[in-house]
Image (cartoon, rainbow, N blue to C red):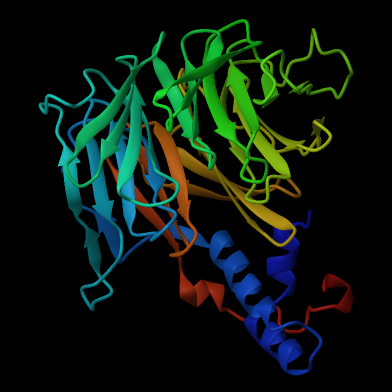
Length: 386
């Protein structure tokens, strides 16, 4: 995996355009270069913000992957908000307004904190939510009424729906519940952790591959077609002992796959971030340094990958740390929140980052185009960077 910092410092936009015209680089290099640059140069947006109506902390968010138009947010008081993030005003200054909302006083709302929300992967007509009231709800977006409600044995910290319509649920029990939304019933349970499960994520590349993280300090990989046991227990020291292997020296409370599914990023309360090769189940031993993490619940991190390179956005206290996942270098630290940040999501179409936390604010981080196109290193290009 390339060092993003080396790439972005060695190229300028004029370099890239000249090499494209000369036939040295493919025309797609302009798009790749621009995307890398924008992922690198994020700052608090001066043009875009969110309508400030939130009455409690925002726990997690999700961007619809079909239109890229709506941001779904789960609140600490049980309410759910849907924002429209597209700008149709004709002016650069724009406030994202609430499109619709499930208020905490709504009889269908979660009784306690809404910990996790997710859009239905195929359209915006449906979304899912789960929370501390031990409920997983499937909502009709048009009516804002649940069409299905599933009772979970423990408090739900995170759920994730796969392309195959299976929903994995991480809860305060030591097993992962699998729910088949097509049948409207629980499929089976995955047993392997010895303590409560804080996070779970499906692979974007393999529809039956699931990763889970727990307070037992382990990250387990599952092939859910086999209910007998987990596929692999990731070990931070790359040993072969499955019984004593641990991924972190503290609770594992955050997981995120790269977009191609080849890598998995995990974070833990041991203040560490680890990059894993999914195919071999191996710790890549990338040194990210100290990543403060004192959260007692799931932390939502995000990864942006572009052709062999990648950027990780990791909540850490009241800051978002931006890392090049190839070298582990801390590219940037985003300051702006006044409380603990619970989650962040990168918008792949608008090339901007959203972060939310206990200060009741949702912030927008976007690239400063004057910085992105700055041609500081016009003569530093070399052929071996191609």
